[in-house]
Length: 361
Image (cartoon, rainbow, N blue to C red; front, side, top):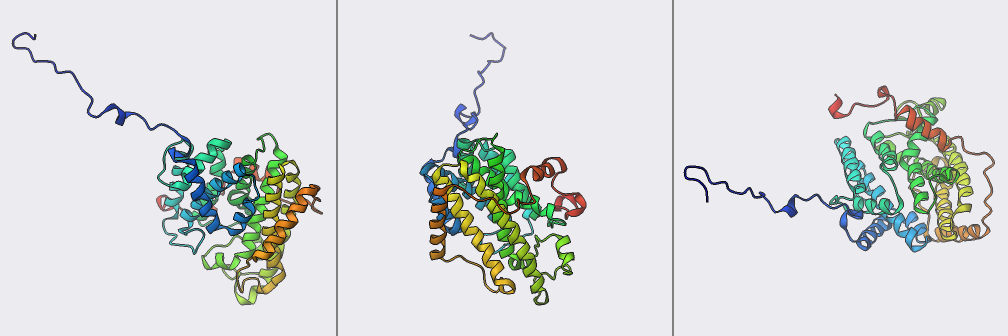
C-alpha cells in the first residue's frame, strides 16, 4: 500500500502488442509460396519472350524453374525502367531515374528476404537464396537501366561492350550460376557472358529502328562517324545502306560471341547444354536474318517462325549429344575480364557523357 500523499506508480505497458514490434522474419521469396512464384514467372516468360520460353523448357525441372524466377525479375525491371508492359511499346520516360532507384530498393529488399509486394522481385529473392546470387550481380544488371535513365550513348566499341555486359552479359553470368557453375570456374562464366553479349548484339541490330523512334541509339559514335552518318540520321532512308553495314558488323560480333559461348557448354549437364545451344541457335538466327535482309531489315520486325525454332532446337539436340563445339575462327574482341576492369575500376561513365538526373540539376 502506498504512503499517503505520494503518487501511485502505475506499471508501464507497451503501447502495442509485442508481436507488432517484432521485425519481419527474413524468408526467401518474401514468404510467398514457391510454387506460385514459379507459376507466375512462367506466365511472364511465356508472354514476354516466346523464344526464351521455348528454350527454357529443355532444362531439367529444377533449373528450368530457377531460370523462370530470374527471368521474371529481369523482365519486370526492364518494364519498370521503360514504362512497358512485358516488353511492349516504350512508355513515358520523364521519371525513369526515380523508377531505377525503386528497382534498386526493391531488389535489395528481396535479397534480404523481405516482402516487396511485387511478385517478380519476390521471385528474384527466391532464386537468389537458392543459388547464392548477390547484390553485386544484381547491381551489374541494374546499371544498364541506369545508363538508359541518364540518356547515355556509347562513344566507342568498348563503351558498347560495357553496356551489353550490364544488360545481358551479367544475366548470362547469373544464368551460369543457376546451372551450377561455381564462382571459381572463370572460363565457363566468361563463356556465359559471351552468350549474353551475343543476344544483345542481335537485339541491337534488329531493333535499330525502334530504338531510333524512342530517341535511343546504341551504335557507338565512332562507328557512325566512320560511316559519315550525321547525329540523329541513322535510320533515315538515305542512310539505309550504311545502317545495313553497321548491322552486319554487329552480327559478325554476335557470331563470334555465340561461337565462343558454345565452348563453355561442354562442362554443363546435358539438359542445360541442350537448352543453351537451342537459345544460341534461335537468337543467332535473328541476327543472321537481319543481315540477310540488308537494307530491308527494318521494314518489318524480324521474327523466327515456330517451325524454324523447332528445327533449331532439334539441331541443338544433336550438337549437345556430340558435345564437340568448334571454336570461332577468331575469338571475340570483348572479353569478360577486360569489361569487368572497366566496370569495377573505371566506373560506369564519365559525368560529361551523361545527362544530369533531375535531382542533380
